[in-house]
Structure formats: structure tokens, C-alpha cells
Image (cartoon, rainbow, N blue to C red; front, top):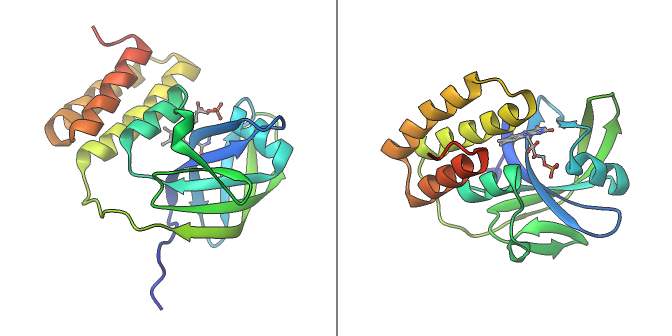
Length: 188
Ligand SMILES: Cc1cc2nc3c(=O)[nH]c(=O)nc-3n(C[C@H](O)[C@H](O)[C@H](O)COP(=O)(O)O)c2cc1C
């Protein structure tokens, strides 16, 4: 039987987690598929703190560019979140997987070995491949690296991504790019 979806290579998802005090959080992370499923998470993130507390993470398969920018750099609105199996998931996810996380700690970046507990595939419109979306995802990764390392090359790379977003993206990619530039203070 055909699989409904499959993680391959590194798949970019939005991880939703719950803090010890019950607050939901969302942030993009990459799910690594090499026979097993894992993720590498920086230990200075809220995502890591939450997983350390609950040992659970929901991987949301999402194609909304704005949610990637908001969850990476700011906060997503609480009304984007719905509880599933006691953990937060994104309402607009095309599918989600609740994982148990077995943590291998190391000082800066922990490895999470992921064991699927439950998954759901939702009926959502199919999106054709769009270079603007892909460029927006690249730009969002560069934005998080720029914030961490302050290397100017990331700003040049974001500029290149922006050209692709302008040429190939839809309104949602353009809005997400504006938010990203506004957040970095490079919207002049
Ligand atoms: C597409 C994408 C993939 C990312 N993948 C990871 C990852 O695998 N591990 C990680 O620690 N951070 C990753 N990041 C960066 C985090 O999302 C970012 O540091 C975020 O601000 C962490 O938020 P938090 O403190 O709310 O957890 C990624 C960012 C993007 C845009």
C-alpha cells in the first residue's frame, strides 16, 4: 500500500511542544531520516527545554510560509494551535506526528531519537512545488543563523532569496518575507 507521506533526507517541519508549566511553543526543526528518525536541537532553545520536560514533540507538516517565519523568529498566534493527544499541534498542518523523544544530550546541540506514537493525515489542498516557498524557507534559516552568528553573508543570501520570492512566490511568501525583513530591521 502507498504510504501517505514519508520523511526523506532532512524534512523541515514545525515542532510544537509543551513547557513544564503547560505553555505551547512552535519552532521549525529538521527531521533527519537515515533509516531511523532523529533531530538535532540546540540546547538554548525553548523547544529543547520543553522536550527535556515532557519527552514529547509534535512534528507538523506545514506549507504556510508565514508560520515558518513566525515560529522561527517570533511567536505564532495561539489560535493556530489545537491540542491533540494532550500535546499542541498546528490547526493548518497537512499531517502531524506525535513523537516520543529519547534525548542524547551534548552541550550545545542534543540529538533526539524519535519514536512515532500517533500520526494524523488531514485533507488539505495540494500545493505544487514553488521556488518562492523554498527560497523563503532558506531565507528563514539564514535569518536564524544571522541572529546567532551575526555574519553579514547571511544578509546577502537573504537578499538573493528575496529575489526568488518576488519572482516566484505567492502573496503569502511575500508577506512572510516582509515580516522576516522587518524583524531583522533590513526593511528599509
Ligand atoms: C527551516 C528551519 C529549520 C530549522 N531546523 C532546526 C533544527 O533542526 N534544530 C534547531 O535547533 N533549530 C532549527 N532551526 C532554528 C530554530 O527554529 C530557531 O532557533 C527557533 O528560534 C527556536 O525557537 P524556540 O526557542 O522557540 O524553540 C530551524 C529554523 C528553520 C527556519
